[in-house]
Image (cartoon, rainbow, N blue to C red; front, side, top):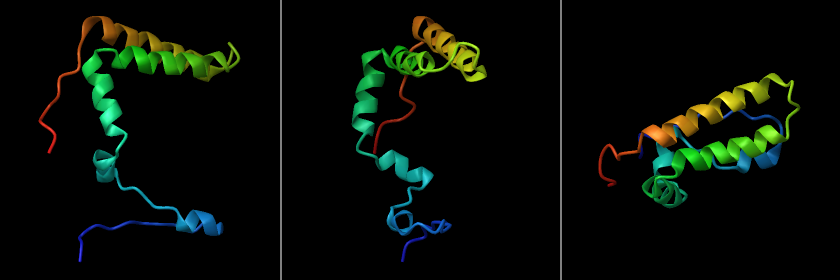
Length: 93
């Protein structure tokens, strides 16, 4: 028996009850992590995220407060891209 627990709440939609629930620690086992590792190793991680956020911001009205927040995040990520790099904390197990 595993010590892993999941808390689920049923919202009345049967399909939702059958969907798997991921725990935070399960994110490390995600197969998408290979692509994320490659993106981080490429040195373009912050710029790629900023570009994705820019696409989202373009779909918002300019006076939308979320647009302003996204623009701030984009500027922050581009600053990080220019002045910092990602270094792996510990080797993958």
